[in-house]
Amino acid sequence: MDDATTVGHECHVEINTLNIPYGFNYLSPHDDVVVTPSSLRSLFSLFACIRHAQACTLTGPAESGKRTLSTQVSLILGRRNFSATLTTYTHATRLLIGALYAGGTFCAKLHLGDSIRDSAPLIKTLATTLASIEHAVLTKNPIVGLHRSPITFVPGTAMLVVFPSSTGLTMADSEEIRIWTEPLSRFAIV
Image (cartoon, rainbow, N blue to C red):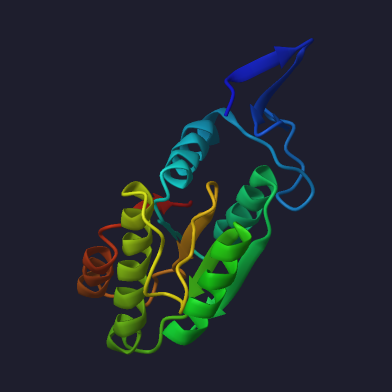
């Protein structure tokens, strides 16, 4: 990632040879990728996690832009976006294997059931798997145990877990989710 640069009177941020407008010429998250002064630090933090193969959780209210952010990250990286709402670990594993082999962006939106206990096995196992991938990358080992053959990590692969709005969760449930996902970086999208 390059530092912000100025061309004429138009200021932009260069990330992987993609020029992203910097300022307030925002049209829509679907039409234009733009970086504002308030989002630049978060964007660089997110890319620091991606650079170090650390998975991230995105939390926030409904329609706050969590899925759109994952799409924008894919666009900035120039990678495919593997995104789906997950209810089982088997589904999550298939999506994750595809993203790892393709070097794309893995975006798992979790569907929380009526009780947090219903989703506990999925959340715990997925967080453990993503943390083990980070450990394998940092120790320069192939990723084993996820697929029948070892997987070589492609630098720039993003691993994001999106939690739905937490209006129905109690404080105790939110705290349990925080404990289960402790190895992952957290980003609150508002």
